[in-house]
Figure 1 (tube, one colour):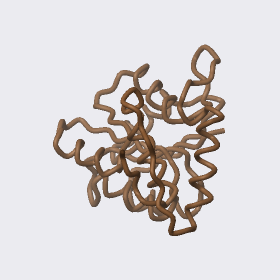
Figure 2: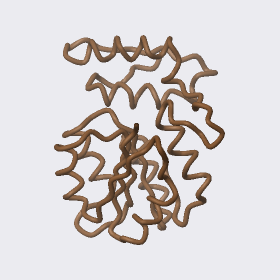
Figure 3: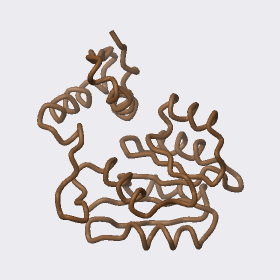
Figure 4: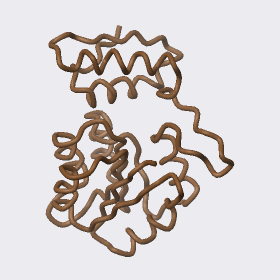
Length: 185
């Protein structure tokens, strides 16, 4: 069972997200208040946070940054009806978000984005998603990173050109585990 926190100041958006994402594998918790979302971070473990970018009192990227201080190790998705590409690229580069969902969204594309960032979530045809983090080799890497997260060791990743598209995953994994950002060689 996966738990997704949805945060949007518009209740009809929260209801729509619930309808689109509900399944037997997913529990969905929704709130209109980003400050309540931070309180929930201290009370319940979430596998994913899907937040609107523009909300009264706090931007979605600020919520994600503050949420990470309370609860690390979850998937970060941001959505917005506003196309502020510079801000989104900055958020991607800072590791604050892993996926951007434009509003209005395509239901199938939204479901696929969620499946992509939740390893083992079953797709509509019942098969598990094929993600880097599901492989046995990557599971071993994650275990080693987690073991090092309490030390002052520097973690370096070597990425071949063919793997460069997955380099952001390594950065996010290191950040979520509390270790220094990867060194690309």
